[in-house]
Image (cartoon, rainbow, N blue to C red; front, side, top):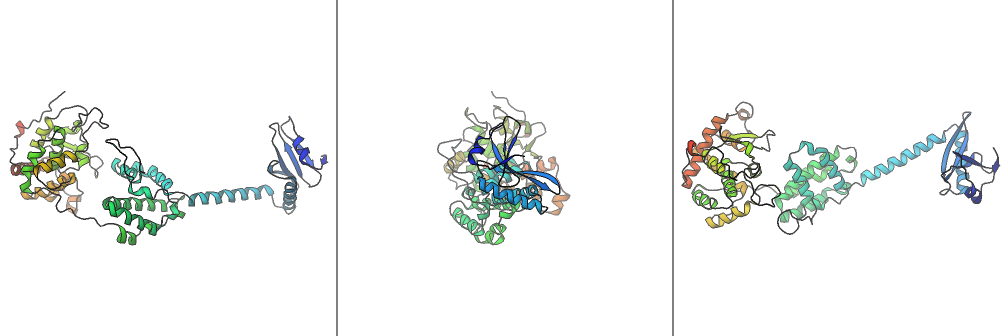
Length: 434
């Protein structure tokens, strides 16, 4: 092989139209410039290892200087003379560099990046409501409201999202909880529980476990910073308030909102469970409702009582939803923001504030007046069985639940001064209203 002293000019002028060509250096053994038709050239080293030819690339000529390339060629030649394969050494170095970069990337991952991966990995096992909570609580501010004017407020967890996961310490979480608790204690408590589940998942994930501080959601943080849940003793209708409550609520327009609010009190259902009731889930013939239960994935079947049946049979069938919206610009096709007409009705009736969940609480409390079995009340409301017998042995059939549910409804209506319709007069056939 002809050898010449490599210079910057000779390297620049060295071209080829073949697959590759070499210009060998006379100063450093094994050093050459390799040219290709693409116009790119690189320094290479060629030598012998255990009697066999080996070749490896040093680097592009535009990156390496001639003196650097010669020094590297001599080093590679020395390794080959000692029986070390320079190619394997280069591979190991590249692998180590990549591992170092990957480790740094893992340690620099933000809470937001890991949170997104967490949701993607877990959402198939969650209910729609649970997924919605994760998205809502981590949402940043500035999002336009779907209804009304203005922007949505940032979720409680949004303040933590820009932080690096490794910086999410007990001190940071404690300070965040203290700040959030001042304005929205209930949301702060739920946010903490979501954050705790997220960090525990991250601690078991290969990409994030090195960055997680589990003491950030430890028992000390929960004890010192998470607000205690307070029982809402007054968020419940009293027996003597039923008459004025029904009188005000029955006057609410649209009728779907009025029927919905009365249904919350008469079924004890959760507000979203009842709001999501479809016509296909209402069986007027066999007097039953199928409720989308948050505990039982398949939903739960409860009785359709006479008075509530008469309310439903009078509602129009605009779409699939029982409590449908008459508004043409409705995003869901069903009623929303029912709390506002309820608040207005409470003011008209001269009653104190009562939440929609308070109506569910009222059903459970008022049912005790007729001494209905706790298990029957819990089964109608969709509570998890609390006793061994209820959990493993006793599941009341629909007709037995109906016996108690009709009695509960009848007693509530009696206190409200409303006559309960007989079953044959309860409008158990669906009325089609255009």
